[in-house]
Length: 455
Image 1 (cartoon, rainbow, N blue to C red):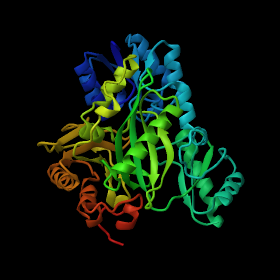
Image 2 (image 1 turned 90 degrees about the vertical axis):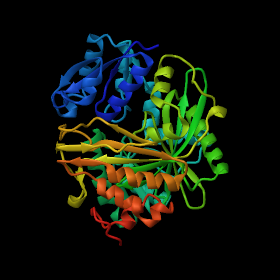
Image 3 (image 1 turned 90 degrees about the horizontal axis):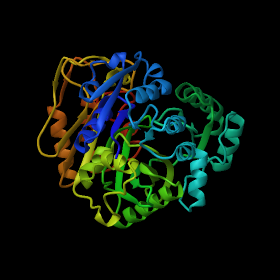
């Protein structure tokens, strides 16, 4: 087993990993920037070490500093969490060179699945349905337009090596392709330091459905059901739920089996996610594989009772999965709301600052994943998500009611958040009835407005 784990991350995911390690008897090392000196993950870990100034490029993205900290603190493994270096194959490779276990897949698998063209090729060869798209990444708009003309409009231009909704533009007519390509490319270069773009057929108003998989080095691969991540703003997920209310048992079985085949085709080990688009006719298409733990992993834990972080650590220690496919059952319905420090009334502008009053909801089936506390200074350098509110109930109707109650009880003062905006979504009739897809926010709310401005 892993004896001492360095957590190469911050915030709620670092706290989440520390708690799992405590239960497993694994010592933890927190890394922190100077801006995070008083952060909860720093205070909860067995040991902590500063790795640089506040900006992430000087701290949480500084591979040499993080690995130096791991060596100095004698950690035998590194967990990257999500974001930052979690899908960086170079960092995973450097961990191996330092004889430190990387809690995640092999670096070659990260590289292959992180490149959308390579991922598509792998899945196509394995007989996995994929959305029509580029054969090769494009760095010039002319090459991208040739692919768009071949595929047929509308198309979506996206970063070949990116994620998280950055570097994406929908193009509906050929005349707009050049400008939209350049806009997406500039954002891609800024976010990922890469100019390679990918062109894909745009599926109108699908559901975004992802399957959680676990795979060990002994050849065992299972799926833990699906999550519906369709409530998104500018390709960033806001609300997720498990299971998806639009999927029948027969379709769930087919998609789950496809996800397992996809993981095997990739030669995957550890926790990962196979992401699909599901159209209104019940057709589903592979879009990408996330080679890390997901932000929304908690709702899968809620409906399966399986601790995904513990499974990650077991797999990284060379142990087999603790469950077989036939052991996995979905019980009830879970919903997650991502609470962000941002102002919906000002186009969701990030709002760092001091939390002056904080109250968490409680009760049966309510879970809070967060690293904030009363008096906490939300720094300006990182992602604006400060809290994940998760509820689980017997069915979807009961889960929606429970989430409304929990949102109504949650108090965060001193900074602006998207709390009220989330509540309005939960109170909309279409959400209540499960009539959701990836266009939900745009079709139900005035652009950039926190008020329920029906169009």
